[in-house]
Image 1 (cartoon, one colour):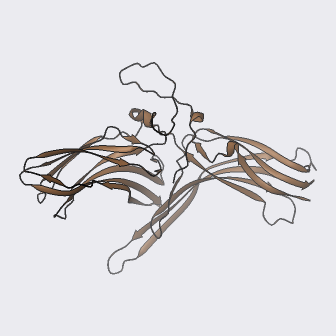
Image 2: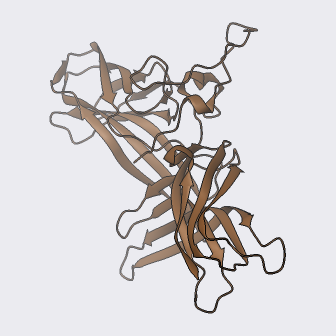
Image 3: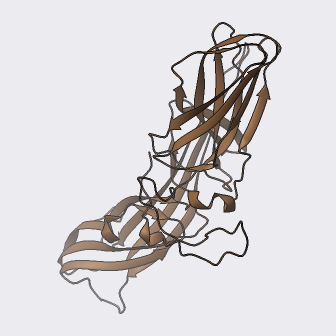
Length: 344
């Protein structure tokens, strides 16, 4: 009397899904002989685990840790239960299909876990359980299947994105380094395998300046909250430095174009989630040859999940809608035509 090989199988062995789409699959188990059970259930769980670490300085300083774990999404289905008293699971292979629609408001999967620092994890798990009435089982047999969920942030529709940022910025350097930096980008939304191209204009007011290089940095900022405490963590996700030095004469301007290739799969922006926000910015930093001051400017950018059409990554082709103005944008696409990738 018993069973073995309890497992969960998603359709096409898929492990990554768009928020708002339907998950399909089967719970499978092999029954050795007729057995009784109270029920076979499937639960989908979305969990957020955050740790805020605050380092106190001073003579009596120390480290405080605030941790919090919350299931922000749960959905449970009963796949099998006895329809009559005494009904048994029959011998053989049992396959129980399921279908669940994910809410559109789910946050994207995310993981940032450095040692002894603030961290955040958003993950999703499917949990199948056989509620057995036998005293031989101390715990109900359970199978787990981790999967990822991502929001569809379409880089082709950046004008419709709710994160609309300025695409141009400028900065006048400090008195010790009379350097002016102006920077602009052609678009605000990017995805994996993209190049972030920045147009930079450098100028001086009344003194020559020699620069060692211009450095582009992709800054990743995370606002992590736990137990009513919040902390903003910043890391340099990627950087690129120009190889040649730059010499500026008084009142001279220099225009150049610098590109930062996104070789990594960057996790997308996360907004409107109380425990974790993730956002990005491109920082353009001037590296002087002698002075220690490094003036810089920043332009916020968006990390999307649907790349531009025409890139190496195949993107969905949205259905055309009649344009009502010069600024009308395509606003529909078929999620099934572009499965979301798994991000690092």
